[in-house]
Each structure stands twice: as C-alpha cells, then as structure tokens.
Image (cartoon, rainbow, N blue to C red; front, side, top):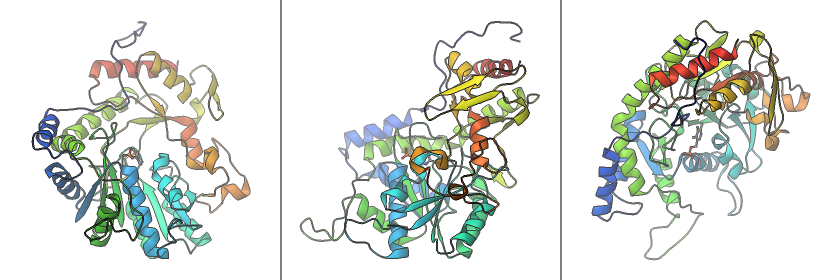
Amino acid sequence: MFEGKELKPFEKKVYLASPTMHGEELKYMTEAYNTNWMSTVGENINEVERLAAKQAGVKYAVALCNCTSALHLCVKFAGERLYGKPAVSHGSLEGKRVFCSDMTFGATLNPVVYEGGIPVFIDTERESWNMDPVALEKAFELYPDVKLVVCAELYGFPGRIDLIREICHKHGALLIEDAAEAMGAYLNGQPCGSFGDYAAVSYNGNKIITGSSGGCLLTNDLEVANKARKWSTQAREAAPWYQHEEVGYNYRMSNVIAGVIRGQYPYLGAHIAQKKAIYERYKEGLKDLPVQMNPITEGTVPNYWLSALIIEPDYMCKQVRDDSTALYIKGKGKTCPTEILEKISALNAEGRPIWKPMHMQPMYRMHECVGRDGSIRAKTNAYIAGGVKDVGADIFARGCCLPSDNKMTPEEQDRIIEVIRRCFE
Ligand SMILES: *Cc1c(COP(=O)(O)O)cnc(C)c1O
C-alpha cells in the first residue's frame, strides 16, 4: 500500500510507550484533594494495595513511591533475614554475591548495590530472552553459598520464572522477582509478581498502567509487609516521640498518585489487549522478513508491554558500538538495530535498543557473568559479541524495541512496519 511512496514523518510523535488516561484517574485525584488526604495516607493508597495484591494473587501489597524503592526494601529485608542486621552504616548484603538478571534495566539490581551486595550476572536464555535457568544452576555449582537471586521478566514476556523459583528453593536461596514490566502476565496460570518470595511492580510513566510514578512491594510474608511499611515511612518506633532503632526511608506512595493508579487498574485488561494487537500486527507485517519477535514460551501469557525484534544473523549488516555511539555499514538486503532505530526516529516515532546487558556496562565490566556452559566471562575474558556464548550480548547486538504505544493507530503502525521492511532492501 506504500509502494514506492515517500514515508512522511508523523505530525504527532508516536512514543515507545506513553501514559494512557481514561478519566477516572482525575476523579480519584480530585477526591483526595476535596477530602484533603493530600499526603501518604488515604483511601486511594488502601485501594491500590488491595488491587495490586489481588492482581498478583498475593496476600500483601505495600504502596511505595516507585518500583526501585520496592526492590530496595525487598533486597534489604532479604539481606537482614539471610545475614542478620548489619551495623548502622553498612548494607545488609555487604560483600555478598547475589545472582542477578543480566539483560534488564539497571534498576533491577541497583538496590543490591545500595545494600553492599556484589551482583553476579546470569546470562540470558535464547528461547525466552529471560534469565537462563541452566546458567543459574551452573552459578549455584560455582557459588553454592549464594542465598539471593534477583530476576526480572523482560518486556512483559515471562521466561522460566517457575524454574528459577524451583532452583532457588532447591539451593535454599530467596528469590526477588522484579515484575516491573510484567504486571498482568501469567506463567502456567499463575500471575507474575507471585513467583518471588518478594516481588515488585511499577507504575512508572511508560509501564502497562501508570500513576506517573509509583510501585508496590508484593509478598505473602506479613513480616516483610510490616517492615516495608515501617521502613518506608522513616522507621518510627511506637512511642510518643520520634524514636528510632533502625534506618528509615521516605518511600511511601502519595495518596494523589495512588488516585491515578486506582483509576488505571480497571483498564489493565484493555491495555494488554491493545498491546497484544500491536504485537500481532507487527508479527503479521514482518512475517516474511528475517526477524524474530519477542518469544512467547510454552505456558506463558504475556502482557505484551513492549514489542521487540531481533534480526537473523545472516541479515545483519556491520554495526559497531562503543560506550556512546553506534555506526553501521549498510549492505544489500541487510540491516541492523542502529539503522532501524534511525529510520523509525526519522518517522517521528520512538524505538529503543534492547536493554544493554549489565555485564557490558562500564560499571560492571569486572563483574562475573555466568553462561549456560558454566563459564565465568569476567575471568575468562571471553566477551564475544554476536557469538554463541554470550546470549545477552548477541540479543543486544541484533535486537530493538519497536514503538508500542497503545494510542498508535493501525495506519501509523503500518507506516512503521513499512519503514522496517525498507531497511531490508
Ligand atoms: C521500570 C523498571 C524498573 C523501575 O521502576 P520504577 O517504578 O521507575 O522505579 C525496575 N525494573 C524494571 C525491569 C523496569 O522495567
């Protein structure tokens, strides 16, 4: 339908994933205003906690200012449970190794570092683009003393979080599930956010539903829920004055923000349906190209948050990246994420590279990353981008996220598909 036509840029930018409001958000925000519950207490917060726990099928949800703070409290609690209470100025994981997802957003594991832990990365499984359970097993063989695993679900497409959980428990380790991207997704009929001993979800502006910011800690363990409530509100003791026995944080959710989230929850299903339609339209439109979309592994029901593709190795043109720039040399019938993202951007739309694996990040360059063959790359120095051994580096080199905004029209999406198709000419 676009045969030979010049593809004009959109007048209005098509985003990767932007907030989609429905009206009820304003009602609950206004309620907070009119009743003067303009702080970190109120009906909206109670309701968000009820809805978040219900969605994930867990007993307790604690509403916090974002998902990163929820993960921090999960990590801190796990650290104290495993290793005891540290000295006041020390992290609860001081000097301890923690197995972490490698191909994810840095916020998944930043809290491990806040608590003094040492992330050891676990390579990505090719079939699911999520943490590789085989590599995790190998990591436990190398370091049987490790007691904590932090695992994120990528782009709302759960991998084998069920196996990850089994492996953790077999080795007596606790699992923290970073379900920031996966709210509303399921594996074997079980909701994401319920696999970890402790889990976190996000209401950041680009997530499947949003409060502009916000997050919840999820758990079946009353003790961690109570601790999270206390720590997130400056850790006051029960006393007539400000009495402190431990370090506090100011991490609680605002009742105004909670109003936005409360208004969004009824639309979670509708947002997932829109994201699914977007994914399927890409899949159909790109089906005869040498690309693969996010894998949907057996037993999983994704929330389709971000559509992404990877290019078959034989159709990759030469692409080089350093720490801040990317260059490519166009070849006939070949392309690369850098070109696709450039062309999408020229259309006034927004794509993004796949999360750059943590073991490739300058700050973690000397950290270990365990592959499914049991190799520890930081020690063997066997970084081979595009090679078979380093799955994360390979997916990063060949993959990109596509505009996945649920307000994108089919016509707009068709133009994006056409732009991608032309990259393979
Ligand atoms: C968005 C995101 C976070 C952080 O969420 P915030 O609410 O912005 O703190 C953490 N982990 C993953 C995987 C994310 O995508």
